[in-house]
Length: 314
Image (cartoon, rainbow, N blue to C red; front, side, top):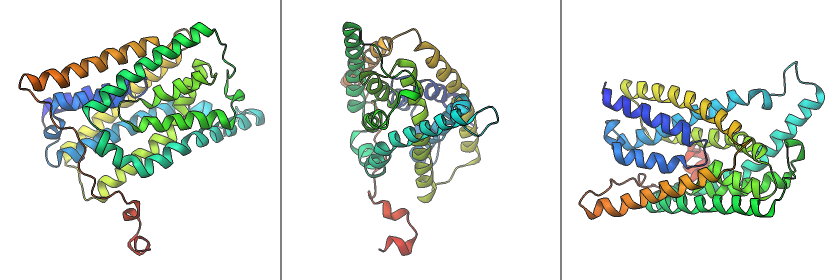
């Protein structure tokens, strides 16, 4: 086993566990890690496919952390819950499902295309800076207008509130946007308070990211890929680290939003995006081109290929 590769895995799992939940774009940070550490070679044979699956696997571990943290809020079938509390949770799940529909539909048909054409340094750099500025503008607007939130708990939600947040989540399919960031922005603009908007962002991540992880995991094995024993160890270590760090990041953000704005995340995005812009311009200019990060060529954007052969002939 390559000890240096294992250290890289641990570091990347830490980055994933932090940036997946803070509104700073996990994709942007992981792209930089991929470029710096050359993860295609770190994973050995079939390196790029394994690297892509590793990202899916640690993302799955991060989702498990959300389930653990909010299990009591989202699991209605306990003796401690009365009928009224169960009904509130049922409504919460309805709003979660409504918010998931737009991204699920768009991701099903556009995920491969977006990865092929937008998964690059320039797209991520632009979205990092752009949405960082949006965060700063939204916070400035809210402070200037002094507008009080009108949706202060899940009891105040409506299907329209959930749908608007879900539509905003579609933008997160563009690399560098940040799923948590764009949904929090949408929630703030329609009058959801910070704590409720942040929690709902975590709630919505469960079905959306579970579905995406399972679909990409299925595609990995469907295309004939396998894992070596060493790679399996890397995956287990990475998942454990991502899970534990995600627990910390989720709890941190839920406490942070009670007394702070999101300006710090907006400023961070602008600074980090500017740093990436410097790298992609300066390094090639001095003879150090950044490695290619474009996903493997999409053979065909045809979901029918995942159906049993008799059905795929229809």
